[in-house]
Image 1 (cartoon, rainbow, N blue to C red):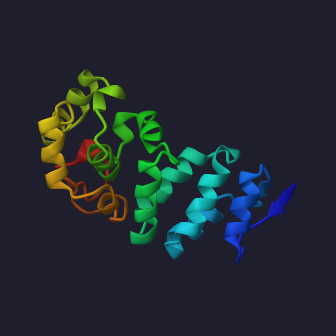
Image 2: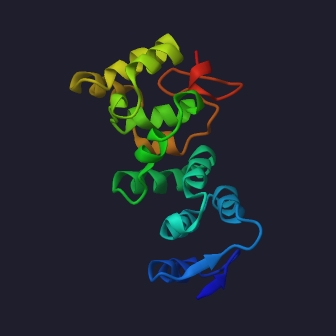
Length: 183
């Protein structure tokens, strides 16, 4: 069953269709759903994207794009979905090259309590990241350090719903937003 859905008034029906194994095609403009999620700050459409999951060839990239552009409502939904395992954002970020990680993505890893050495080599962390980011990465290695990190950035929701160009954990990269360029 192939249903063309780009602007459905009944996103919940499309989610149910996807859960039952139905294929939803977005025509030639594959990014239309991501644009709608971000432009309208729409958590329901995010739930549809997640329900479709790996039916979509660029799912990991789409989730990363939504994360980068999320508004407060989508940010809250992302935080919930990453916490309960519906989105395995930790795995998505763990497959990325450390040079391509943004400050916001790094902040998510820290706020989620992810031990960075599960995904990245310490030699690479120390070679690529600026000194303040290395100090933050070291805090993920201990319980005391993770408590300090939680005190610095209050919640996953605040990280997920924030614009990409602000400070996270006192790190900023105004021009490229890349962690390797952070100060």
